[in-house]
Figure 1 (cartoon, rainbow over the protein chains, first blue to last red):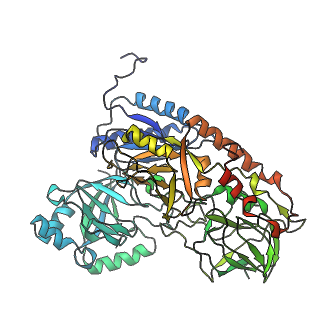
Figure 2: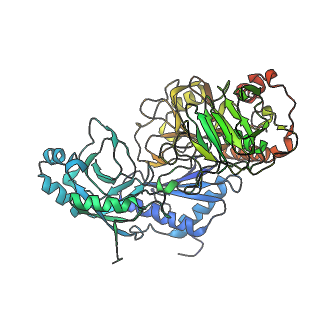
Figure 3: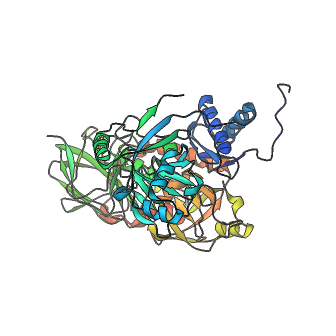
Length: 253
Length: 337
């Protein structure tokens, strides 16, 4: 291919649309899948590296990259052209997610911290121990942080645990809840209403505003859960309350 | 003793607000900040502050505040009656208060929000780069009676009291300007026509996060569930109820309802003044037009310090239509500052 020629437009070429005068959306395919995520994440990295004038922040999600801009400095057309150039320069889609961090996140499963564990065991026909083992045995990919501050949507939930959400959403689910809903798992960073099934709770704080870096997880991070007992939960929660990070960061392989 | 102002009585929903904390949307936290940055700027400019200094944002009705500092300049931006130690005092005017005096701000005649600024700014500790309360997230909190807010008591306390003509503030009209999309393809042509042609009323479900609207139902083209993605400021989403929701400062960062349009940034201060029962409409503009409106508005706000005039108006003569209402109701400015 000569340097002048562009790669052919595939049917899944991302579409760039304005979102008002202060943002554009680069929309990839409408599915939740690691290969789509990888393309979103790759563009996110490229946009940050390019330091496009007037671009203020980006929001990578399952299927699109929202690029916020300052209309006093630039405009949507200019930013869209710059992003378009990055997409062409990028060539074929990235085969996998940029390597994020690997976390071991402690979780107290069941009991008062995971009030739906037994119901999930009953609905799936698995025992409570099997649900715990399955959930803690999987490696999860942080698909996106969104909806609420630090809320982590996790892909990689074993298929045996795929369950529709509760018919009666709870008015308030406590921060730290580790839950499943449909095909995903999640770590709740703040208390909020939810219809997800609560399997357990982590003493870690995914959102701790007083920390220098208030948010623990980012899109592309990989997470494994580590079952703990009540005494460990209480001890770790006390340390987390002081701002300490109690989840463990594993060395990059 | 730290210079402070003390909440003697709090309005129904008051909080400290500045420009908010942009930069965290990728981590799920919307910027928040003043629901109406134009009125925030007006209050701040009156007391010699930068336009986005931290001030008190009140909702529908204001607060009663006692001064615990030797001397401070205070100004109220909003269509509410103001008294100082029980005597009427003007809004849109810098007031010189001394220790022990009490300023009381009543109900707004027009609009949903007003601002009380103090020279030097409200000096609560910044968190993640802002003094704004983000109420949905539990950063900061709604103000309550007994709260003590430190002030730096900087700024001028000399010279004649200065006022600002609120009719000169650069509001866009109640027909909110929108750029269609980013997901307008998820609606039928009829649905889009209804959205742009209809009148929508603000329901009781209205706060700093957003406004649920009620009006002609908007038809989706292909169901109402999409895969969640990022939500820009001013996004209008249409869930299965087919009634639009306008998302504001404390919006969620992502959402999966189709996003029919995005209110342009220059119209957001007007949107921040909408209260339950108000009626609004939407008009499509191009991105280029939206950018021009925003730049004109920013230029007008930057010129506010030069528009301060000696305050001569008798507060008893103030009428609501002289105030914020003129622009909001008649729409005479229509995009021009």
